[in-house]
Every structure is written in C-alpha cells, then in structure tokens.
Image (tube, rainbow, N blue to C red; front, top):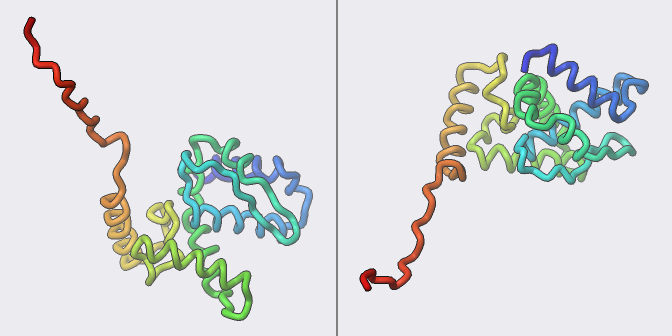
Length: 174
C-alpha cells in the first residue's frame, strides 16, 4: 500500500470514530495506540480483534478497525513501519518502573522483542519492521535474522502435508 492509500485508510479510521473533529494531540495518541497494538498483537487476519484501544479516558473497539481494513491490514501497517518503530521508541523512552502503565507497556514491548530475538532493538519488534526505510544496516540485519527465526519456528498450515488415513484392517480380496 502506498503512502497516499495508507493515509486515506487512516483518515477513514479517524472518521469512523469521529476523531477528525478532535484536537490533533488526541488523534496522534489514537494513532500511537493503534501502532502499539499492532506491535504486541500483529496484523494477522486470524486475530479476532476483540481488544480495545485506550486513549486517555476513551476506549475504542478494535474489531471495527480490523473489519474496515480487512485483508489490507498487513499492507497498511507496512506503510507505517517507521512511525510504528518511532512509537515503540517513545514507549521504551517513557518507561518508569514506578509507573504501572508505562512499566506494563514496556514489559509488553520487551516480551515481543525477546520472542523475536530483537531485545537489542525492541522498537523493531513489530511484524512490519522490515518495511521501514529508516533502518540502519545493523537493524536491518537483526530484523532479517529475526524473521528467519520466527518463520522457521512457525509451521504454516498451507505448507503442512495432509496426514494419511490410518489402516482400516481391510486386506482386500473376495
């Protein structure tokens, strides 16, 4: 998805919730919540989308966003790969062990990063990080290595061979 289409999709999401009428800081906070949700839950079409995005005192149903994006989810988040990484950097930078909210967010971010072998670069722990254009060579190498580890440890149902039927005991003949 190109930048213009991704921007149009984000605008549609804002309009769906009536955010376009609100202060730009609230819209930016919503976008960051959406980007962080992508980091910790991915853009799988198999995700039920039952979660919520929290911005201040407001909660937004995630299922509506997932339905609106449909099969374009992965492409949408790939278009925002650098912005998602920046959001994750902000989460890491705001970590305060004495603040339960920032500590929980940072813990979630670090959990995903460690699972993907990206503990040195937790800001790149999201599914779409390889689409970032601002990555250093070291970051790109780490993301590529992470994808190999994650993809090799996951069996895609499409690639599985069907199991053979068990023997029935029928020996043939009349």
